[in-house]
Each structure stands twice: as C-alpha cells, then as structure tokens.
Image (tube, rainbow, N blue to C red; front, side, top):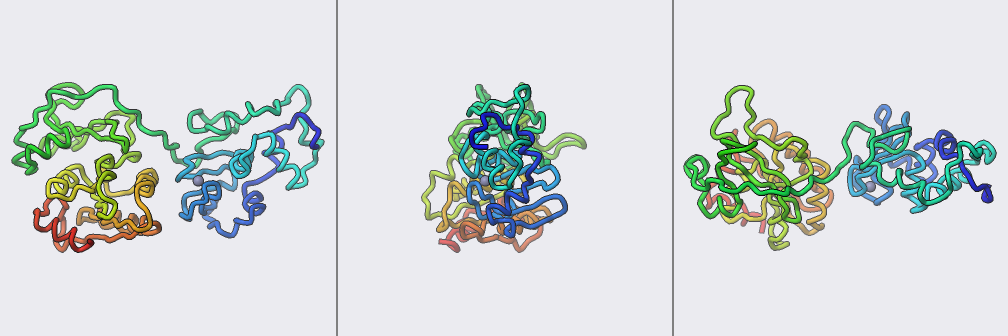
Amino acid sequence: MSKTKFVDFRAVKAAITMEQLLQHYGILDQFKRTGDSLNGPCPIHKGSNPTQFRVSTTKNLWNCFSDCEHGGNTLDFIVKMEKCSVHAAALKAIEWFNLDPEAMAASDDKAEPAEPKASAPASKPATKPAAKGESSGDDGRPQGLPNAPLKFRLDKLERTHPYLTEQRGLTPETIVDFGIGFCSKGMMADRIAIPIHNAKGEVVAYAGRFIGAPPEGVPKYKLPPGFRKSQELFNIDRAIKEPADLPLVIVEGFFDAMKLHQHGCRKVVALMGATLSTAQEELIRQHTNRHSHIIVMLDENEAGQAGREDIACRLSKFCFVRVHQFSQPDMEPEHLTTEEVQQLMEGVL
Ligand SMILES: [Zn+2]
C-alpha cells in the first residue's frame, strides 16, 4: 500500500468511524454518550472541558467548539491529530484498521491526487459550505467566524441626551469614554448608539438602545443584521488592559458595565445577555490564568440566576470564580452605588 500513489479518500472515510478513532487514541472512555453524540475534551488542542468536543456517531463528524473552532470527518480528525496531509492520514487509517489496500485504491478515473492540495478543503471547513460529505460544521451550531471590523463610524452622536444623563445616571465622562450617544439618522435612528469593540479595540458593531420602554414588537436593542454578539464581550478591549490582580467582573448589560466603570470598577465586561457563549468563554480564558479572579454579577431574576450557575461552573475550571447574589429581587449591577461597588471589590482583593 505504501507504494500506491492514489488513495480513494471516500472509501477510507466510509470504512472507519469516529468511535474507532477515539478507541485507537485510547480516549473513548473519556467521552460521554448522549443519543447520537459523544462529548468529551478536545484531543486536538488537548482541552480539559468535557463538553467542547462533540462527535456525531451516525454522521461520523466531529466538532471542537473551543480553541480549534473546527470540525470535520474522520480523515480530517487524523489530519489534525497527526498534523499530516489527507493522503498520509488515509494511509495511516488503512494501516491502523487493517483496511483492504486494494479496495482503498483509487482507479484512475476517480483518483484524488496525493498532494497536499487535497487537504485544503478539509483544513478550512468554516469558510466553505458543507458539500459532498466533506468537512462541515454539522452539529447544529454555526462555526465561529469573527465579526469583521466596521469601516465607518457613527459621528454626530448627541452626547448630552437626557436619557443618558437623567434616566441612566451616566456622567459626561462616561458617555464620551464609551463613545455612546443619541443617533438621529440611519439604521440606529432615534436610538442610543453603543459601539461594541473586539479585543483588539476595533469597532465591530453599534447596538441601538430604544429610548425608554419600547412598544410591543419593537426590540429594546437593535443590532446590525449578521452581527453575532455571541462572539464578543462588551468592553473586553479595555478590561484586559487593567491590572492582572484585579478581579474581572462579568455583567449582563451595556449599562451595567458602563455604570460599574463609572464607579471605578473598570475591569468589567458585559455578556449582552444572561448566557455565556463558547466564544465568550474562550475570550475570557485567553485573558485570564489560574490565578485570576472573576466575579459573576448577573441580574437578580430568573434568567440571571440560571445563567450565573452555568457560567460559574464553566469558568471555575480555569480560574477563581465568585458569584455575587443580590439580596433584593430584580436588582441589577446598574443600580449599585459607588460605595456598594467599592465594598464589593474590596471583598475580593
Ligand atoms: Zn479543540
């Protein structure tokens, strides 16, 4: 077989299963079975989170929702594990699983060249639509492409709008600092425009907050079409510049983050919701270490209570996590006074 020039990748793919591969690597027992899927730590980037690597046993596809942000078929998996070409992966599979070399040899008319070129579609499934049974982000979750930085800025935002100063209690410094303001035209017309930056500090979107309580059917927040907030953490670009020994505070909303910042708690990020996405978890992981402290401070309501349990559980795998609970129902970080915020921070330091 080693002298065979052409291998029928499709035949090799069809002859082996993801379960066999996990068995081959001696890691099958680290995986938990739920119906059609096997969940376990990612063997490619050697992660420890037991839910971030998912295998479909019927489709024989895998996906890493963490570092790799990548998925594929059985051969793609060998390519990643062995850091080799698709051709080399197919040869390994034939050897490991005693496949019939004749049956795995491509006849001239269906031959796939044994050149590195053949691995191109397998190595970047996220940028290609799933086709012909090739790698795909199959498992019901879109692959994590980053939001592209915006090529424009909303200017002429009204910084002194009473909604910001009177209703939300923001100071002019905070308003300018976060670059927010009332927008009178365009997609965010008649809303408060809030720029969202990625970790590099590039603006990737503006969120538009309705002034006051929106009528039935009108969203409180408007986000640009196609923008995926699950890829971002509001204020991450500035939070990561704060000293490492300060705790990172995680809140739900833009205004929670801006108010805490105003009270001197500058190492704060907002989830823009009550749940933590895999991409957000990864962002936090990248900017913390096992000595880092995190305070999870979500709203004191049903969504916040459910969210904080899950978040604390996930983040405590790689740093110190404290969950802040408010004694009053419906309390939000935005409602805290300067003194309360300072007391809270001192409790950790
Ligand atoms: Zn991975």
